[in-house]
Amino acid sequence: MMLVNCFVLAIFVLYIYQSVVPIESLTAPNRNVLILLADDLGLELNCYNNTVIDTPNIASLAARGVVYKNAFTSVSSCSPSRSAVLSGLPQHQNGMYGLHNGYHNFNSFKEVRSLPLMLKEAGIRTGIIGKKHVAPENVYPFDYAETEENNSILQVGRNITYIKQLVRYFFQSMSPKQNFFLYVGFHDPHRCGHTHPQYGSFCEKFGNGEPGMGVISDWKPRYYNANEVIVPQFVQDTPASRRDIAAQYTTISRLDQGVGIVLQELKAAGFLNNTMILLTSDNGIPFPNGRTNLYVSGTVVPFVLSSPYHTEGWGTVSQSYASLLDITPTVLEWFGVKFQKYTIFDRHVHLTGKSLWENTSCEAVYGSHSLHEITMYYPMRMVHKLNFTYIENLNFMMPFPIDQDFYLSPSFQDLLNNSATGQPTYWIKTLKQYYYRPRFELYNLTRDPDEVNNLAYDENYLAIRSQLQELLHRWLVDTWDPWRCYPQAVLEDAGPYKQNPVCMELLNGL
Ligand SMILES: *[C@@H]1O[C@H](CO)[C@@H](O)[C@H](O)[C@H]1NC(C)=O
Ligand SMILES: *[C@@H]1O[C@H](CO)[C@@H](O)[C@H](O)[C@H]1NC(C)=O
Ligand SMILES: *[C@@H]1O[C@H](CO)[C@@H](O)[C@H](O)[C@H]1NC(C)=O
Ligand SMILES: *[C@@H]1O[C@H](CO)[C@@H](O)[C@H](O)[C@H]1NC(C)=O
Ligand SMILES: *[C@@H]1O[C@H](CO)[C@@H](O)[C@H](O)[C@H]1NC(C)=O
Ligand SMILES: *[C@@H]1O[C@H](CO)[C@@H](O)[C@H](O)[C@H]1NC(C)=O
Ligand SMILES: *[C@@H]1O[C@H](CO)[C@@H](O)[C@H](O)[C@H]1NC(C)=O
Ligand SMILES: *[C@@H]1O[C@H](CO)[C@@H](O)[C@H](O)[C@H]1NC(C)=O
Image (cartoon, rainbow, N blue to C red; front, side, top):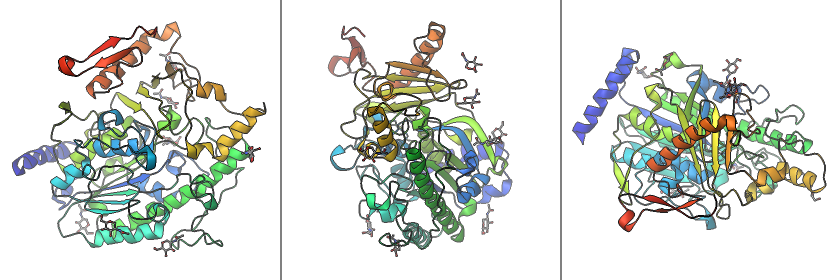
């Protein structure tokens, strides 16, 4: 074990040397990781050129790191995305097909060897503060855990004063010379209109000091004028959606101040100059065409990667593709911990993401979504390459499902009301188009960033479509996707087919 680690470390040191990092950094005693994971955050940030919102703390982090413009989650749902972040495996491979909480009840397979598990075994102290939302415990163990499992999610995920105390305690309880991996899972800026409507649709009133709202002493609430917010192209521009976005901005500002506080604690504890910091989000924003979709609007995430040893990249914007599946390999390489190959159900597992320290622009990113809530079965697979999106909707004959939280949102209610009464919706599509999708979708993002002009059935694009289809299916086979023969065939992969799985035709006309 020791020998293996030294060997890997040697390669790593060699790599650092080759990438022209100042020699002093090689003498750094420790290497640490801080992951700042926001909940349903999109690109409503200064560092993504939104000039209306006020997010100076994330902007300061961006000034010490690289902002990825083309970073995507592989799955547009909370627990599945977090399981992919923490295992490096897509949902169909790690078993977290949908949400973990309540009657949704999804869990990863017990064989999964997660990032916190591998780091713990390598002697790195692991901590999680805030939203966890993945299980079982023995797959995702953390040495220090203050999560929704034994705290109020509002306190541990949105009360930035409480979060500050927990983070401070984590740093104070470090032993000398120990390395750490700390994952802070903010619940901001998630909606809360369906669980805590008294605090507003984004919990934007929680802790604002008004009667009944309580106080978060470290938070200076920022309020936004609904007339001034920037309405994303994929959201209808109406008074209702603008008010909804203004509330979201207030909650994003609380997240930003929380990020500032956590970074201040990191600095005060003396770890700023040897800690890799990553700020990202589990999935896209909870607005029409957003979260639960594999469209760009549902999968694009902010991604700010900061390393004290890569100062030459500070303040730059990268056009390279990045995936949340890259986080596990990136953190492993940072620590010089080798990924130990293992099996799930006797099938070999390897990581398909890449370490972002390798500085090779990856040519494609992949997506795989099966459910959000237990009732929301709508499997989709996706690949992005050369600024094209290719999506397969496996159950395209059924209507696209809607989650409880989004259903009650002012933006969706506005779409429903206007559609019901035949009024203009001011949306890029109709509800009918949103519910009933073609089996294949192909978009040229350079010309069609809103993904409304489907080229999948245009004969001029058949070659591109089949190229992307082949690429996608190679990844599905590589990651043991149980859906990979669906919907026109059945996968047989047990008994006599175990060594050579086959797709057997159903003759269902597809
Ligand atoms: C990091 O900061 C500590 C204390 O501020 C200092 O002793 C150390 O040399 C710094 N390390 C690097 C690599 O800059
Ligand atoms: C913000 O705008 C500047 C100037 O146009 C551009 O260079 C930069 O890439 C943009 N950043 C992002 C993240 O889109
Ligand atoms: C939550 O559980 C952890 C152990 O898993 C324990 O250390 C911590 O004190 C608990 N926190 C609360 C608020 O009960
Ligand atoms: C936030 O946490 C602090 C510290 O635990 C507490 O005093 C305060 O009442 C909390 N605020 C809210 C709104 O719950
Ligand atoms: C990656 O490569 C680009 C161009 O080759 C270079 O400008 C940049 O500094 C490199 N980044 C890192 C982190 O090595
Ligand atoms: C939608 O219609 C319902 C019932 O008429 C009404 O209560 C609600 O305020 C409307 N919502 C929006 C956002 O227009
Ligand atoms: C990719 O598409 C986006 C719009 O979605 C556009 O801004 C960007 O310039 C395109 N990139 C390339 C390399 O064509
Ligand atoms: C995609 O759109 C861009 C911008 O219109 C165009 O230049 C490019 O040729 C298109 N790509 C293909 C393969 O059609």
